[in-house]
Image (cartoon, rainbow, N blue to C red; front, side, top):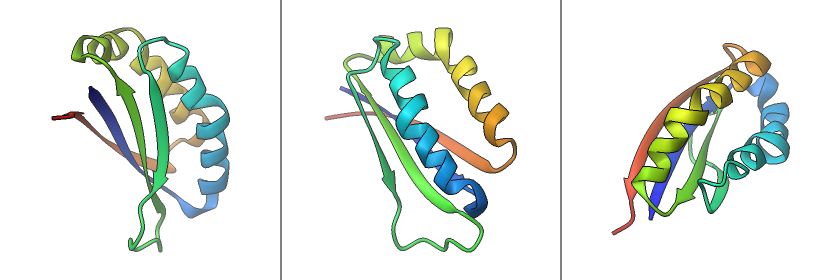
Length: 100
C-alpha cells in the first residue's frame, strides 16, 4: 500500500473554509479518480498555531503506479483548484510512503 501524504499549513483566517472544502469537495474529487481507495484528514496537535493550523491529508492507493498516474493525469489540476480558492493562504509539503 502507498500513502500519499500532504502536510498543509493553512492561515487561521481561512482554515475553517479550507477544511470544509477539503472534506466536501477536494477529497471526494480525488477519490473519484478511481486511483485511491481511501483518504483521511488530520490536524497536527501540539503545534504553534499563531500563524496557521497544520493538517495532514493522507490518500491511500494499492500501487506506486496508481500514485504516478494520479501525479501525471490529475495532480496539477487538483492543486490549481486549491490555489485559485485560497491563493497564498497555505503552504504544502508532499511525501510518498510505502507501508511495510
